[in-house]
Length: 416
Image (tube, rainbow, N blue to C red; front, top):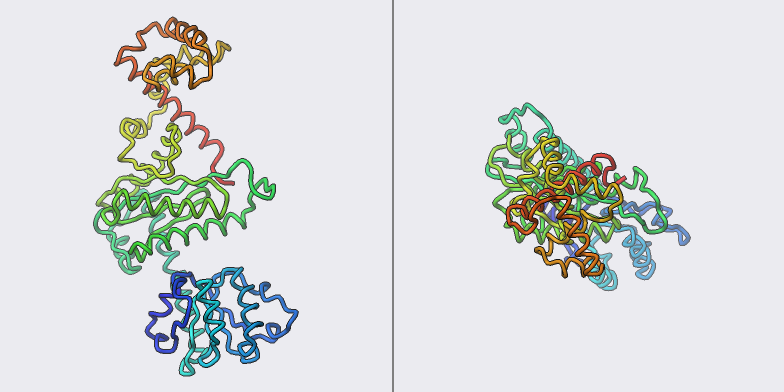
């Protein structure tokens, strides 16, 4: 629930009025905090100790609201802990307080005397508990769709409709893959589980918030150990818009948590039984993205071309045998310390068989390049410049990288 949802609740709409901070109306509300306690009145009390973030802070004590400077100082401390909004009794809001809330884009509500605080607390807390329950139920449905072998489609459709999600029509999966950087800020060598849980929860909120700003009110999101999965209407977002949305989310996540994030997007499917295919495609897209030399953050399965065919081949031995048949002797030569022959050939192919360009890219002398290419041609015993051979070798290197990356992912995991 965010501040706009709060304003639109029928049971309290007439008792609350937005006075300032309208630009922050999309802030998420997690709970309520009443800042009228005896401790809060003490000059040496640190209110930050009681704030955890995303609270709707309610202040009605005139001993606080009459002292503008002290009140704003206290709210400034709360603002640093990312509170959601501020609610103050009518007649107790000064121009200075309203001006500060506008400045920091903190929603400031005026409470009518007709709205009793006990009623406000009960209504908001009940709504938050129900929302959390609905969120957990949506996660369970998405988990069932993605991981269960025997789906009761009618039951899933009924459950989703009850939770406000219509699963008829085309849907696609996206996957945000989280990777810990080698060096973390403040010399942190590893992230503890509590930090990881908080991070995944906050990323889920970022995802929901961004999609909501583009008209998708209810989004099915499922945080995993090292990823976040989303299921979205396939025809609701164009490729261009979806790329913009995911790039914005990735930018915020990377900036906030100093991790590397990539997004893979699967194809749209009409039937629930096929949504799992879209998820698998999103996973395969990220695996194949590691083959690419570009620095893109968002990858679509539909745009992978020949690499999408590689991902659909589940027989690993078949792929390995293909690599062995095309460049196996070259790999063995490198293992026997012949030196960089695979890298040299792959670079040569990437530069369209231009030896000079490949030598420049590898920072080696042209004579060295010529020597290596002569050795490669002897080992392969084939015409590298022949178009058919050229394509076979390109494919072999692509499969080699794909298999190596899949093996690395299976053995390591992304964020730990």
